[in-house]
Amino acid sequence: MQPAIRAVNHAARDAGKIALRRYGEVTSGLRGEPGFVIIGAKRGGTTSLYNYLLEHPSVAPLFPGRQRIKGAHYFDSEYARGPRWYRSHFPLEVGGRQISRPRASPVITGEASPYYLFHPLAAQRLARDVPGARLIVVLRDPVERAYSHYKERARHGAEPLSFEQALAAEPARLRGEAERIAAEPGYRSAEHEDHSYLAQGRYLDMLPRWFALFGREQFHIVASEDFYADPDRVVNDAWSFLGLAAGQLRSRTRHNYHPAPDFPPETRQRLQRGFAAHNRDLEHLLGRALPWPASTHPVRPVRPGAPRWPAVSVVVATRDRPALLERAVRSIMSQSYPGDIECTAVFDQSAPAAVTVEESAGRELRLMTNTRSPGLAGARNTGIGASDAALVAFCDDDDEWDSDKLRLQIERLQSAGAEFVGCGVRIHHAGRVITRVPPPSVDLSQLVRERVTALHPSTFVMRRDALDALDGIGLVDEQIPGSYGEDYDWLLRAARRRPIASVQQPLVDVYWHEQSFFAERWEAIADALSYLLGKHPELSSDRQGLARIQGQIAFAQAAQARRPAARRASWRALRNNPLERRAYLALAVASGLIPAASVVRAANRRGRGI
Image 1 (cartoon, rainbow, N blue to C red):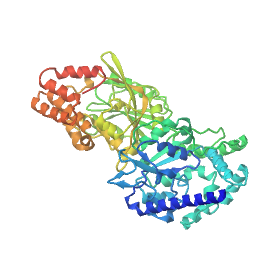
Image 2 (spheres, one colour):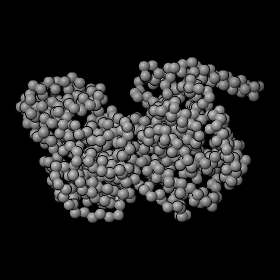
Image 3 (cartoon, rainbow, N blue to C red):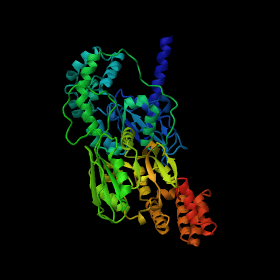
Image 4 (cartoon, rainbow, N blue to C red):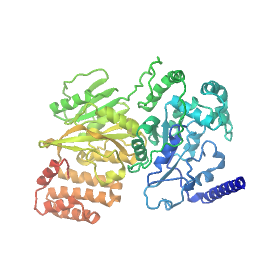
């Protein structure tokens, strides 16, 4: 009886699954689309990463949740089932909110189908059907990936050959299969998916196809080895890429992990030699180093113009501060960063003056005059336009970098798959040093609530393609009155595309002195803040953030002795947030109880501004 009972139970479960899927299809019009897709690579840790992502309260599972489905395999094997079937896997939505988690905002659902990366048609299908999806790619050392893939097939009885025999048989097994899949879209090839041990590790054969169909900002590249070594950091980076707040992992269980005897070291060495050139070219394509064993076997020369570490253009806007400029430039030219650095000093409203600093291999100093609108914004844009380096960085002429700043930031930029990265600062003022360190990731909502003062312009490093894209960050806004808050404007634009990553160490010395402040430019400050409110609707959508800006405007008006205007602005701020301190300070200044300069000095002593 027991086998019969088991058969009945299995049949009942299968019938239940079919019924739920039919219900999902009937209600597909009320269901959303994937916000993210983990597209591969197979045996790279995609199951673990997907399950870890689900621990975030704003990430909902596929429907039905109790079945714990990881991926729909729609864009590879199941495309003939149609879009209603695919949408049946996603939660119900009403008014743009997921019924499954109505109190969490935002809520995102994704899937993980690791065959997508390798499948010949998946990229174009996904680009056609879900062009806005964010794509997570997990890349594992191709040699280790191949053996893990083989172990899985052997464990399931789908591979009768030894590892070495399977590798030798692979070319014959795969011959013509990709072409047949492309020619016959309904054709499913077990050989192509199951026995492609080495082919699925040749990422250079796959990634360009995806990069040609999606914007680079839609990709988040994860190295499996980084993921295994530090899952908390890697998962938080992925949550940040999805626009979600940081969190803490509850579980670190490795899913689908099955230990097995290692394969012969001579086979490993042979495969590592075979992949060495591929891996180097892959690093060039991605613009980042990969944590895979280096091979001592001679490989073909590196392609000209494709360095292992991307070139960086550092723009330093300056005006009549030669001693401070020399200190800043010296700290840039002495970076430990292995890649090329081009330091461009842009002289604003002054003629270029010689800077005494040594230029070594991979370090170039350029001097030029601001050719755009006078001021900081125009000078920075002049420097940006004069270079085509892959990365752009800023340093104020009165600040100084630690020697490891660029190296640590670019490692962070690459590991987080970010477009924009900052770091902590040490603020020097009035004989005191105040350290400010930003969170590991800052999204748009955080920047609306607060300026995050640790994200100082001298810490900014960003991808050039993120500036130049059609919907990119763009240049520094030269229309902002007095160039006040141009850095905050840039941060808001950057965070609108993707959260800003940070190295949680102070790597920049920021020197505050009399020339650093806008204390005598209150009218420009008030005008600039009003300009930002008009430019960024997000600032008005959050009452706490709006109150902060209104409080700053009120204080600037009070400092100009515009008492009625200051009082009106203060009360507007307090209506939005009764705890807004700047509004109370503005009322105190407008009433003559305390001078504005005294308030500013007190804030500066704490490493803050108004």
